[in-house]
Image (spheres, rainbow, N blue to C red):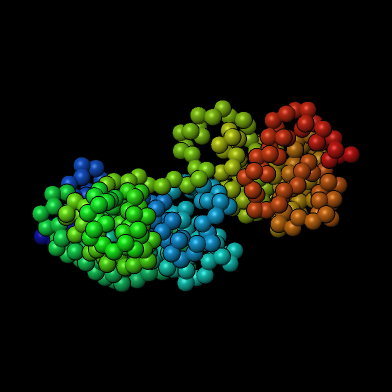
Length: 406
C-alpha cells in the first residue's frame, strides 16, 4: 500500500478485501495510542465478509455493563454474572464470551433479536472508534473455524461510516474546548468534580445535584452519557468547558470486575481437589459448573455424548459425577442404573441434574441410585454445598450413598 495513505485508509482497504473475498475469521489490530508508550489489542470478527463481533482489552467489562443496561437490564443479575464468569473461564480464545451470553439469553427468551443486534452494533462501533484515528495500527488476519455468532451481520461500509462520524464529532468537540490541552483526552477517562463551589455557582441546583451523583471519578465519559441518558457528544460538549476551567478533572479509572471472577493465577494456586465429571449434552451446564467448582480446586470435565461416557469415566476416574436427566439416545435414570452395576462406580457420588424438579423425578432418581438431585441451571450455593457435603467429609459421603442405594 502507498505510504501516504492514512492508517484508517489502510485498514479500510483490508476490510474491503475481506468483504470482497467473503472471508471468515478475525482481524487482530495492534494499536499504538497517541502519547502512550504501550499498545492495545482489538479483535474484529467476520463471517463471509460481514462483521459479526468486535472487542478489545480496554474497559471491556464496562462496555458490557453499558450495553446490557441500555438494551437488556434483565441480564444484570447474579445468575447471569455467574454465566459470564463461566464463559470467561472456559473460552480459550477469550475473545467473545459476551456473545456466548447474548446467544444464551436469546435462546432463553430474555433478549430479542433486535436487542442482540443493538448490543453487537454498540460494541463494534466503540472498537472502531478506538482504532479509526490512531497514528499506528498493525493488522494481522487469522482464519477461524469457529466464530462467535452468525445471527447479526453488520455491513462494513455502514460501520466505518458511523464510527468515522462519531470520531470526527469527538475530535472537533475536544479541539474546540481544549485546543491547547497538552494531554490526550479519551472517553475512557472519568470526570470528577474538583471545584464544587465554583460548579455550584455556575449551574442550577438541580443540575449540580445530578452532576455530583455521576461525576465521582468512577464513571467514564461513556458511562456518564448513558447514566444521564443523553447523546455522547452532547455530554462531552457540556463537560469540556468545565474541564478547561479546572472545575472538573479527568482521571484514569480501572475496568470493573465481575462478582465471583478470580484471576487464573488465584485459581491455579489452590490445592487440587480432584476431578468432577459433568455428563450433559449442553456445553453451557459444564461451563457453569466449572466456574463454580474451579475456585474450590476441582477440575471439571464435560461429556457431551452419553454413549461415550463410560469410556471417558474409566479413563478419568472422577470423584463425583453430575448427570443430566434428559439427553439424546438415553436418559439419566438408565445411565445412572448402568453405572451403579459396575464395581468401579458403585460408590462414586452421582448428582442428577434436571430442569423439572418434581417429587416423581426425585423418587425415580433415588431408585436409579443417584446420590443427590439438583435443579438446572445449577446455582452456586447449592452446587457448592452438595460437593462439599459429598466430598468434604468421607463419613457423610458414605452415609449418603447408603441412603441412595437402600
